[in-house]
Amino acid sequence: MSISSSLNAGVMGLSVNGTRLATISDNIANSGTYGYKRSAVDFSSMVLQQKTSAYAAGGVRVDTYKDIAATGSLIRTGSATDVAISGRGLLPVTDLDGTSNLASNRNLMLTPTGSFSADENGFLRTQSGLFLLGWAADSAGEVGNVSRNSGANLVPVNISTSQFNATPTSSIELGINIPADATTAGAPGDPYMLPVEYFDNLGRAQTVTFQFTPTVPASGSSNAWNVEIFDSAGNPATSVGDLALTFNDTPTSGGRINTATAANGATYDPATGRVSLNLDHGPVEVFIGRPNDSAGITQLAASFAPTAVTKNGSPIGDLQSIEIDEQGFLQAIYDKGFRRTLYQIPVGDVPNMNGLRALDSQAYSVSNSSGNLYLWDAGSGPVGGISGYSLMESTTDIAAELTDLIETQRAYSSNAKIVQTVDEMLQETTNLKR
Image 1 (tube, one colour):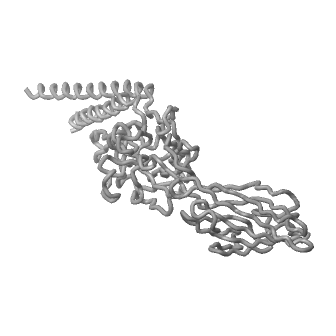
Image 2: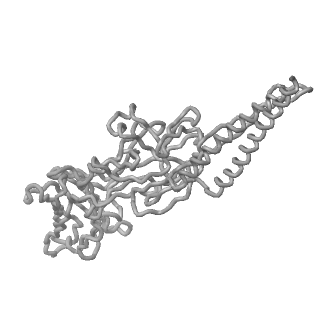
Image 3: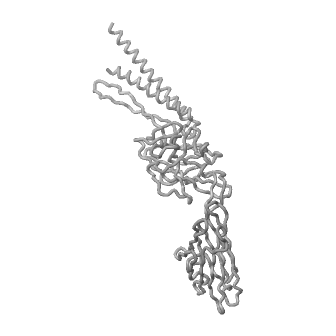
């Protein structure tokens, strides 16, 4: 009977508009919640098998979802660990249990933004209990080959283990000129000393000294030098390596290394121009230059000039602050002025963002509807970069929600009127039977 189907359709209209009202209420309540993605409803009609002589109302049904693909505006804050994604993508996070569980047992979640701060154990977490995840970097700031289809290589970000840090020197670059006139007949033959500071494996400053002694011939020019290398960390009077250098004086390669022969524990690789030394606290490579190359050590008719002597490594430093750059690299800044990359924070993405399962605290988890997770480098592929000193505002538009509220109120009242009208018509039908 068509009148009965009208009653059912009216009741269904009341139900779906009540659902829509609930989503509007939730959106307005979270209009000031950072990272909140508005809830939305999708109405669809239901059609019953119809006959030409009568029409039966099928009614309406509703599907609710989170519009996770929408992005809110970013606002600037004063904290370097306030983090948001400037575009598509979500940050990987976990709960408290995930900080101690194996990756296979960890609850991997995603969130668009977070105000992170270090807890009593050094983990970066939000006030709602979401712990930031990232790939741990080695001493060179590299994360290596990591899994991007799962959280197998993700670890909770902890900065307490990097409160004090020192990086030993592993490479020294020598860009110097030694005087060509020192190898001509009649020159005094005095050695030239070049002390270079480096840092050992405990962060202490040490000195490796290069002593350049010219070979003075009886006539002409030898263009030859003997180099002895001394390490202050061991016995400063004992050489840790010797070099025999000769230089070209041809029109095309004048002043450049011709041959280099290492001895006394040192080795020279002409392909790289590097001398390998075994210092008291570990191996160090010294770049002196390749044969016939203008870089490194040269011998020209000028004074002894260390123009470009550089080294890597750093002394022990106390952690002052941390920052996260747009590529997702979390860097520790120490009081000695150097930086060290501790973690790389990836950006998670799925084929269907709106298919993610919503959890508490603006967190989401992967579901069958969302598709598989892939972890991108921030700012690459389809995902946006990571913005520090920023939080993402709620995607709720108050004006739009209030407009929807008025529409929902009218629709609810109209459906209620249908129910009332059908009830009156049924009452009239009942009265006719008396």
